[in-house]
Length: 232
Length: 230
Image 1 (tube, chains in turn brown, cyan):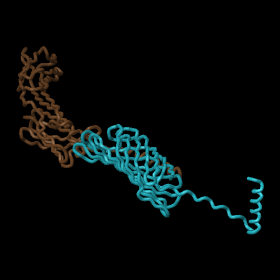
Image 2 (cartoon, chains in turn yellow, green):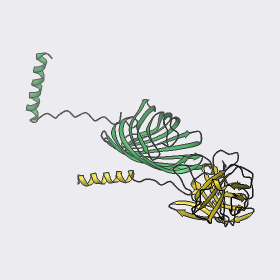
Image 3 (cartoon, chains in turn blue, brown):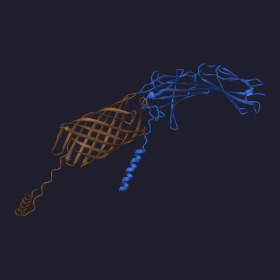
Image 4 (cartoon, helix red, strand yellow):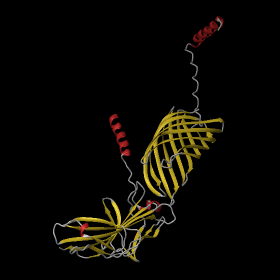
């Protein structure tokens, strides 16, 4: 009898000790001023993808919109529906616009909290990439639509016959040339090459202008690729 | 005592035995002292489980839970008849899902007993007001010492001389930088002679943050101790 009582007490204590409370993921429990809105947008030239994650303070983590809260995305005045996706317990909101042709505009509408409206994510202008085939001792010349503003530009040249060459470009002037001497020696000619130019911009600022707390982190990637031939 | 007086007592006793033909009746035992219906000194050990929702950041509500062990000392005295005072102290470790802290505090209050009665089910109603200081309650408030006012009411009943029933309510409002906290402590206990067992309940209700929300916490736990009634 005594042993049974002891086991009962130990079991109850263990149940209490092991009963960990899971932090809520519902947005209704998370203040806009504690929210981090992370935007990852990419445009490969054949379509774009926008992923938005909402994160609360530790230990809340990933947040799901609930209780009348909503999030909307528009680009150049066109609304793009956001779909909730869950991967490995992580909740995100995704849209697939035709392209990142203008700044992203987010509206986070809260039913019982501060709304964050017209939250802009700057997007550099879209560009088209062109390149000429390499012949003789001509350099590889590429051209694109230049853009001003703070963003990073990376050039990648790759091919089965040369491996790959990565080169960050310091300025976005719309043209660049790579001499044959700068490229790895091809194992075989003609050699098909793939030239990829990537423009990345990041934005980090308060979600609510003039109000402490709540942040926006955004990363926009525009990538264009083109095939050229390295001819003998 | 003089030898003559001793002899006189012995003679009187023998005479009584001879006359009555029976043993003398024993002197009645003194009546046990009635317990005080207002005064008390008590020491007890208790434990509580608590859970609720806490404020995180500017206005995020997250759940928490924990346990606390408490040693309590309470003294209630009424040196001026209807007017009295009480001093209470608590200390013990608190382990919550947020962190681990030491829970301790001291409260003092002036008391008045507007109602007290004797005969069957003797008892009293005690009201009090005072102040105290102690570690943060609810436990998730910023660490530090908080000073607070206190209002309290006690009901005590003694259905028998050796059995006491006690109930009490204590209201403690606390303000922090961002919150208005109201705490209600409710206690029920039964005493048999010197031993007292009971249970304590606590409801913390804090309002504030952005957006303004209510954060509630609940405590429950038993205690056992020794209580002396005046």
